[in-house]
Image (cartoon, rainbow, N blue to C red; front, side, top):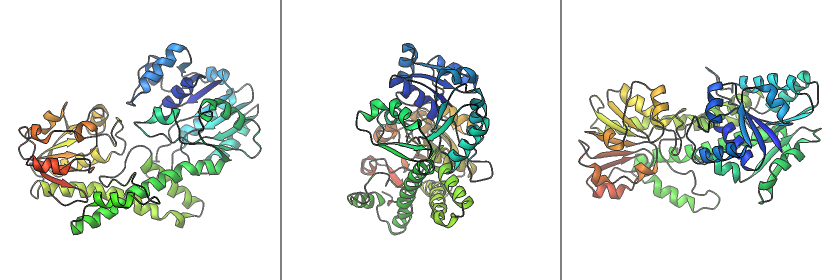
Amino acid sequence: MRCTVFGTGYLGATHAAGMAELGHEVVGVDIDPGKVAKLAAGDIPFYEPGLRKVLNGNLSAGRLRFTTDYDDAAEHADVHFLGVGTPQKKGDYGADLRHVHAVIDTLVPRLKRSAIIVGKSTVPVGTAAELAERARKLASHDVEIAWNPEFLREGFAVHDTLHPDRIVLGVQRDSTRAEAAVRELYAPLLDQGVPFLVTDLQTAELVKVSANAFLATKISFINAISEVCEAVDADVTLLADALGYDPRIGRRFLNAGLGFGGGCLPKDIRAFMARAGELGANHALTFLREVDSINMRRRTRMVELATKACGGSLLGANIAVLGAAFKPESDDVRDSPALNVAGMLQLNGATVNVYDPKALENSQKLFPTLNYSTSVVEACERADAVLVLTEWREFVELDPAELADTVRAKVVVDGRNCLDAARWHDAGWRVYALGRATV
């Protein structure tokens, strides 16, 4: 089949390459000529493991191309995926839908035959129905709106696109073509037994934000418990292991630490709260305010722990920060807890040297006043404390004995509870960690 994908960021570029990998003829569309030129040349403007290979393979095979031309896109296919960003509004919790509206307003008048627009972006519930009405007023032909939320994890986006754990499709009540078209597009995945759930539009919209809200709640729950553990010198990691054996709870995402960040979870739960308020159901999601508060409080707590590790003051301290991306296997620094902490350390008088395997360029754009290093050793040179704030494998597997001669003080602060504390302690290091006693 033929399809287009509007938006070529983390979601859109991955989805376009993934649909081509499934055998379809795909056109990726973006208003940024620079981004389109890079992608057309096989260059990805962000880091996502495995994507470059899939992208270039399908460019070479002729199944994938990129353009800024909406007329070209409208002519190319009858199924159009919408994967543009929905960032948080400035000064507001709500989602900014300008990019979503712009695609509808620009594409629909150019459609010369019946078409299906399938939303992938995370939007407030009710958006799809509003877009359907918006399209109806602009269209000269029948345009169906459907919603197919994405469940991609940065760092695993290619795998999640080609091996999803479920496919959800919301359709209009009077839809006649959307389900059949999407089933055909995803046929190779459905043949593998991937569950396919068809819902109304509003349920499909709610699935993604509900999933993110639940995930954020689970992460903030264990971080709240870690605060209690710190008060009584209990070990939150062992506690989480014990909880994880309960099949009703499970161990995944019970890793206490610095908390969540990135371009999805924080803004999505805030937009969810904002939309609930608009619908008169604000009391239903008041707990998410505390989830958000707990998460943000972890950053302050990390600064406090680093201060303690440096003897009670950060003034004049030389601190190595290992990690800037909000999670490993990504160069995304949007709302990154690690980079936020690095900035606060500097504001409190420390000299901060940051190293990240992939996110340095993006970090420098956001926090240009920090010092950036090209290796772990360079960042740790004469450090009074080493902070591990993103759990890259490179950091988890560090040899504390080899690093000992580089630092000024053998002090490590584990912000992700990812280090083998006993191994570092046995090598003569003082180990601090969130939710665990100092060793």
